[in-house]
Image (cartoon, rainbow, N blue to C red; front, side, top):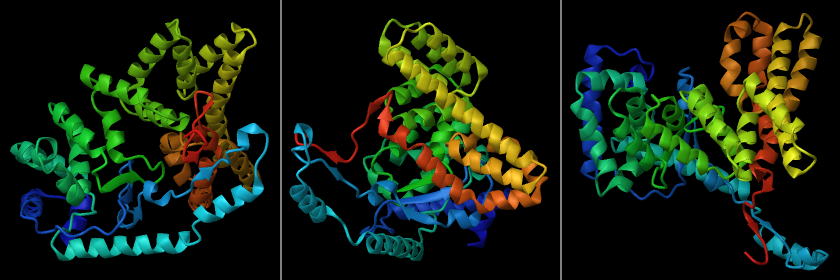
Length: 414
């Protein structure tokens, strides 16, 4: 564990690189020889880490059931709902039949299964089953021996047992994917590995502790923007299903390497004669934190007669302003002379904050460190901020471009 600790904290020297190579080669040989293959009576796992590179080993050791395994809520709509009334007797019986009164105990049981599985894998020698190797360490290793790249990713991108490898080593391959996106000349390998890791076979997903976005998604949008990569970005943009998905894509691209690409995409959509394209452009502008986006939305509102399209543009403008307001009030929280004023600013900040906050928060790092009391207050309220973001983004999770998205709902005709 001391060696793993050293690698995770990036304090790695030449001798340790050789040791890491030997360790990882032995680890992958164990997978090839079926040394770690046991029944997984356990839900998929999420590891919380940091996309910003602030290495908190305690956070890395916190593992959770994936969101999909936790989400057991299902909303049923009575068959009489659309014809003028809810039959209370039928709906109560149906609701009570499907209600899970053991949710908390089941979640506790799943967590215990995760702990047991991690211990079992460690005892079998698979110490990297649910650990993250920092890309900086792998980058040094690949510089020493580039042949390892093709050798290690072959079982995933071209082998017939990719599902088996992803079951036992997906956190390792996530780190490899992050590393390859940052290296010049390995875009094709990175994209192939990324596609596999985004599939259903990945058992352990490494996510940012604040945004809960996978770290490979950050790396995907930070990579050097070639034409083939832009095409993949475009496919990702076209595959979103909710406004919050769109917000994540726009934010990752904006704070990654995709600013120019985003502006080009928006310009194309704005000039299109297809109304859907214009609507999509407006919502994209709402999530792009530059004054030009705000001015473009204002212009569209002024030139549009009263209609649902104009109302959509107005709503998009409000979403743009929400980010601006939260930035302003967080700044006031830090700069206020009196603690009472700071607290009031923080309360207003909570009313408008959304997940874009995590991307511009590093801009305030110096200011935060210069205000120890405010910094402590901020750290004490991290969970409060996360809860308010979840609440404020609820409409974005439930809609896509102004239309309700039916998720986990059962209607008479479905």
